[in-house]
Image 1 (spheres, one colour):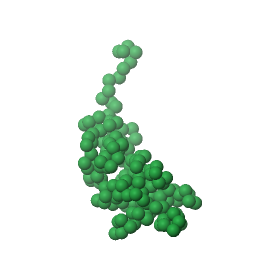
Image 2 (cartoon, rainbow, N blue to C red):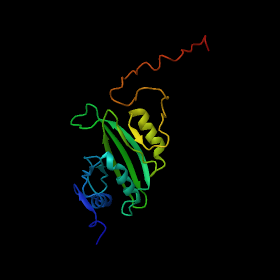
Image 3 (cartoon, rainbow, N blue to C red):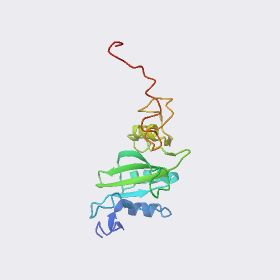
Image 4 (cartoon, rainbow, N blue to C red):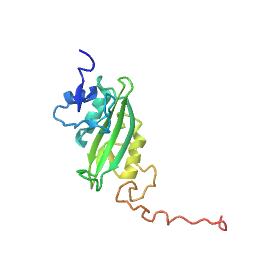
Length: 187
């Protein structure tokens, strides 16, 4: 059997990790789709959707399973879908995975909502996620349960807001007014 015939086809796109996920987690609808719907051909990169309560199981499987072997977490970020047309959820936490040994990529999206958006930490799988999770916590307010040191990384402790949320005012909330103005005379 050829490598191509063993892969599952999603929108005429073959991807071995999607087949492995379907076999391992038969009850989950991963809703695989092209990352960019305009892209065609065999080099289309896929994105799957995972519920927050199954995220850690799925990501650990993608890291450990021999058919997937996603050794590298390239990026971990977040999108605020506030006022986005047809959006059902507020935040999308996105994991960009790369398998160097299998030469494939996959994006995993997990959606969470207010008032307490949280997902499990993946630092136990990819150590490099530590600072990425801290950045998402600081900028978006998505909490990562089980993170070894979840504190602010770009703003300061005690800062009450999350600046990359879409409801954060463009000119801030007065946090810069507390700084002393330095002029040529006072310097």
